[in-house]
Length: 326
Picture 1: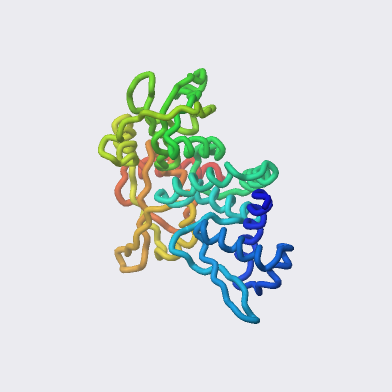
Picture 2: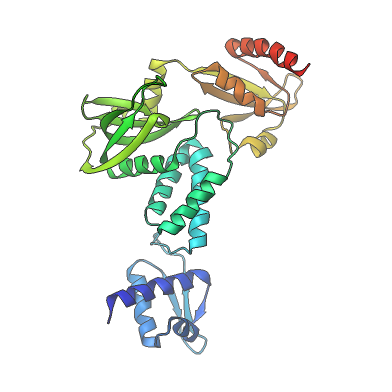
């Protein structure tokens, strides 16, 4: 029997089984244009791959997929793949910090095996959808993030061109072993091992101009302390301390999360001095101006609880904003 034909039939069978809860055996064989005996062999191939295909005997017999003990490979239509990729892209850009990296790696895996036409379609969807994030930072190229995520996953060395803090700086070629992508505040950072300097580096992803896989395995040592996110946070704090503030929003937690939960985090339930329901929002960045910019998205009354620096900036800017409306 032609192996390619058998493989194609098995994939087509899987697609049909995922589309309907139960298929009569005769109808399924007709859809695949095979005999009942060939259908049974194809069902066994799927079972060997880990799919739990249940069979019902008798005149009304047939086949259906059941819940299995493990997650086997899945087959998606082009429309389903495009929808999943768009959702993963949104989660990678604006989801909770604990899920961004997972969404990014999953997106990278999915785009890696997409046909070129479908890949262009997914990228068009990404580029045309506004996620409405409160961040004022430059957008990150999702394709670049995917390359970095795959290199972290596969422990593969990269050649990158990296621009320093000066806007006129020329991108410098570096060879790095990527370890982990870490979202912090409004930015993405790449924790990596610099092979030339034999030291850890925390690079801003928006300053990476290009990244090219080398096909070579990386040799980065274990992350000090074992927690990449904590290690990146310590290094950033050592370079430039963060400005933090707690904002009390005069609205219930459920209402605030319902409107801003996709774009921000660190909300906790609170109460005002007179006992009314409120929400405390903890925000942080290396610049107090970024904290002030985030407040423009609040449509409820609010107050700054613990940041004299932010309060002073708001007082200074308040007069200028008021003058601009006259």
